[in-house]
Length: 409
Image (cartoon, rainbow, N blue to C red; front, top):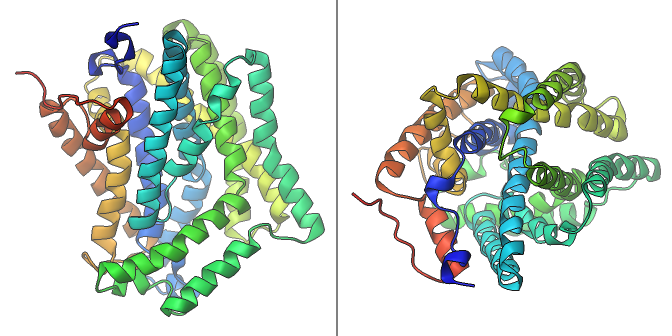
């Protein structure tokens, strides 16, 4: 085996439509995350109702539940699974050394996720992705049929867990909730100032105090949302898609993509409207009922987004729009963490202090501006460089050698 066999995928070998899907997913991730960055999520009902855009905010919130929440992390998770399928296929060709590189790659990603979680934003997903990604080689010899069965079981598990917890009257994340408030009390963070702490923070030290308890909140969210089952199940579907060579030749799978898109829209859109109604009204259908709605609405609509964009690519693939959309997708890691840095600088006290002062509609208008900025910035960056800055560091730490980042003239 020569050194060339152990080299990473070159930029010229990338699929533009796959990067465009990542770019589109990043828009949805930003739409979903920025209400928390802007601290709107933490406002009391009274404070939110007092916003001048309160009427518009209600509509936007419904649309977020219906069209955004869960759907784009579904798409992002599928893309991670597809990416893992490519990495694992390459690792199998390389033998034991290939899987060593795979685990090293996941280890570096986990370290980046931990740094992001503890020092920038407590809503990080990278650490969970890296840890669950390490399980994927265990499924490399599982048949395609068994892979889908495993995926189905994992995606359905939250319904079982939520129903059992509802019947038993227990909350699995209670220890983390108690630790969170103990941590808050240590630093003087209370229910009254919770929504304003980060906006009023005069130093990074105060921001870090909030992030410490935020890490416990993240653990609570993963447990209450059964996120590990969902993400691993979506990874396996992405792994299946990669195995079936759908990524390599989407043109020959046009009919299949059309069926997925039509079924996903027909099932996902109306049920997503019910899911949004249930979420907006405090889950009158109960935790288990809400979990059933999530299963029946979020995944079909997320799959429809993915297949629909593939069909658009097949029809309008020559449009320059795809190149612009693919730019942040080629720098997905840098773009994702870049959104967190921008959120901190715009909304927190160590930046522009706009937190807790914008309604939800205004927050999402900021998202559009941030995303357009990222598209242009990534396009300009990739004109001069081969990789995003964090992608470059990730490659070098994975392979243990230097890679030239500048493009050749």
